[in-house]
Amino acid sequence: MDPTRWRGVDVESDGMPDRTTAEEQLAALQADRTAVAERVVQPWWYDALLGLLIAGFLASYSLRSTWVTLGALVLFLLGMRGLVALYTRLTGLWVNGFRAGPTRRAIHVWLVLYAVVLGAAATAEYLLDVRGAMAVGGAVIGVGLALISRWWTRIHVAELRGQP
Amino acid sequence: MTAVAPHFDAVIHPPPRLQVCGLLAAVDTMDFATVRDAVGVSDSVLSKHVKQLEEAGYVRVSKATRASRLRTSLALTKAGRAAFDAHVAELRRITGV
Image (cartoon, rainbow over all chains, first blue to last red; front, side):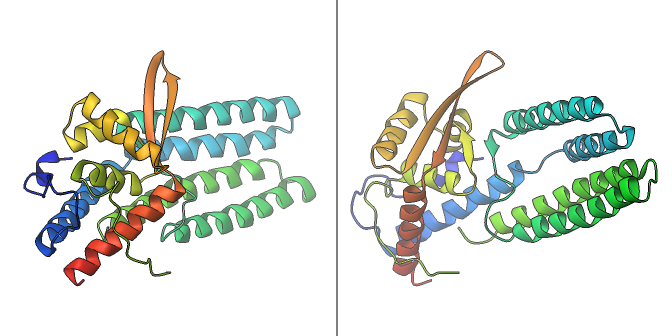
């Protein structure tokens, strides 16, 4: 982000800005949002790790061991915490994935995908006794999450490049 | 989308504070150091502005230790977000947008 874009913007007045100052301030605010838009984009491997974490956790159900699933859950939670810390360290900021706004589209698609695939996989694994169904479902959900995460970021970037 | 009533806010108006609010409005939290670099001021100058925003109830300051380093992060409060939106609406009104 370039702080020089705010040079020339009225810095002395404490009163109501005139039209020129207001225009300059709005332009500077938009320029800052555009700079944030460039900063929020996560590296591709972040999404890959995110997908792997959820895929690994869901796949653990196929082993049909409570202890394995509990261990996978602990790894999943630690991994998620690590990803949050990593993202914050890389970008210097954090944005809640469930925030209001246009990105909700991606969240809705994710929730539908998660519910449908998990429901189908659990039915196959536990009701139809298809061994490995949860592993396949986990892989589908993992790949879906990685792709939806990229899509979410694209929507967010487009939003930031809009009006302040 | 609900229209925001324009309102000039003297606390937000000075450019460094307007810029801080603009940056924080785009995210949930931002590290103090990231804000400082974006605004282009020293730690002490930013601290002074953040203090004023905090006293107005517009900014929340959080401190956490990560990897044995103390990190300070800033976030707009709900009141701060509303005040910033109203101030930006006022700037738009002035420009006739």
